[in-house]
Length: 306
Image 1: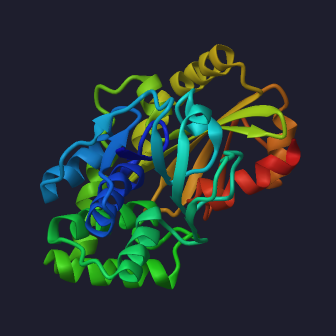
Image 2: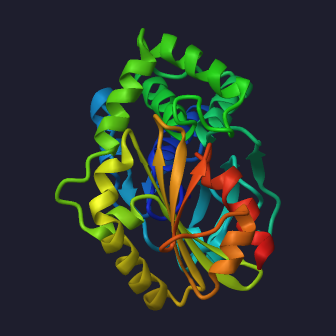
């Protein structure tokens, strides 16, 4: 029976490349067939990576009842298919907090407090003794550079930087930082994008002790281009809040050059967000200096407020 490998909804580069890289590893080391999959449309950044290294777009898989699955880049139930409880989870490769998914049988689990799921998967390659193909090495390298914001994110570890250097050598990439900047320029493009597209490019919902909170992030080379659209983004956040029955919606406009984020807030109780970051919101906005990571610098501070 085949095993489907996929990441979270609104897939980012780590979840798409993770599905590809882990499937290849398992197909080389086990008898079962592993199939890379995705839950939604890919971003311009991910398309850039696939095109640069000749990667194939994973199949769309929105229902997994009765299937055997290996998940990457999350363990939070809201990030997966509505029928994920009806699937058999045989494995996890992740770099986030342990979420609320449950299994009814033992499973293979690789969860590390490092910058990227593809770094975890690279360690799996080394453990299994499987060589990383040149094209997959390039995609994994780019996914790590994306997730660690070219090593600037506080989630980045020496394990991640070492993995990038080794994967770059396999892929034949001499200036990986230059290539990563090209990727972030593609990621920063906003012309023609609707407010909903911008708000949900990298968006996740969290169940925080019974309260639903949505958190999105836009990582850009220069967020000043979005200043004329901030009110439009806030209006759409209000619609997202109503449509999905959320208590709070947060959008991070992350400037990778200034190394900080402008926080946009729509909430039933803004004081919770002000308390979380010891800030005072002005017109539902605040600058968070040095904040680049939703995983490490946003979620752990917001969740205790609920």
